[in-house]
Each structure stands twice: as structure tokens, then as C-alpha cells.
Image (cartoon, rainbow, N blue to C red; front, side, top):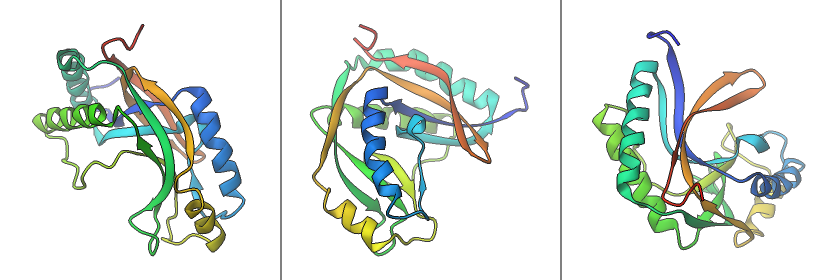
Length: 198
């Protein structure tokens, strides 16, 4: 890669393929209720910890090197997260993001990990997140700020629905390449947690 190359990237937790299939079963039904929503493709489902934006590849290399050294020092073990409940951001009157909730015994560790990544990114002058961390998986985006009454009812009826659980064993620095058909994600680096490779 050339030194002046600009990279769009983010730091995330990927989901096991069986979990993605389970989530997409829900999305496939929701799609039938509102075609105006731009739904996330099955292979792109993930839990974002930090969006880094579009930055020079040299700066992305710095955060990669920093995290590869510092994440092991956290001594965080693998942890379990539960997928449960659906909702929207910012609210039902202006729904722009449709999300799947994150719960479980590992949420505390998840927040420690996210806060650490945010602090390390700030050291390298990445933009600070303006919103407090609310763990979720983005399922779709309603660019008009509206969704159909049928989709709203479908989501509200399932606001306590359990969709599975999984172990978090690593963190991924992901490159996002925007194409007309949608984004393509490619791992730049994978940072294992303690026990994440066992």
C-alpha cells in the first residue's frame, strides 16, 4: 500500500457464522415489511467498538501496532455475550438505525475493552466518539427516519426475543471498502484475547 493511501476502517467483534445465520433469519422476515430500509448483509454483521473513519494508511498502521502490543496487557479473558431484543436509534419517532441488543455476563468486559480502545485511539488523534457506548449490532438503516407500521410492530413484539449467545475470543481491525453493491469488509489485523485461540 502507498503511504498516501486513505483507508476506511473500524475496530469490531465479528460474529460466528451460525449466529449470523440466526440473525439473518430475522432480517429476512423484517425485509418483507419495509423495503425502504437498507439492511446489513449477513456476512457484514458485527459489533462495532470504534469507527476510525477515513485516515492515511500510516495512521491506521499506528493503531494496529499499538493495539497488538497493548491488548495482551489488558489480560482480558474470552467472554460470553447474549443477543437479545430489538430496537431503534434515536427513538421510535425518528428511527434511523435498527439494532439487535447485547446483554450477558460479558458486557462489563466488553465495555472495558471498548473504553481502552477509545483511549488508545485518542492518543493517535482519532476522532472521539460523541455518543456514550451502547453495545448493539446494527441490522439496518432507515435513511428517511421512517419505518413502516408493520415493521415497527414486528420489532416491538420482539423487544425481548433471545437470538443466541457466543464467546468473544478476539478483536478485529477491519478495512471497509465501499462499493455500489454495498461495503466489503477485510480484516487488517486480529488481536486475540486471553484464551481466545484455545
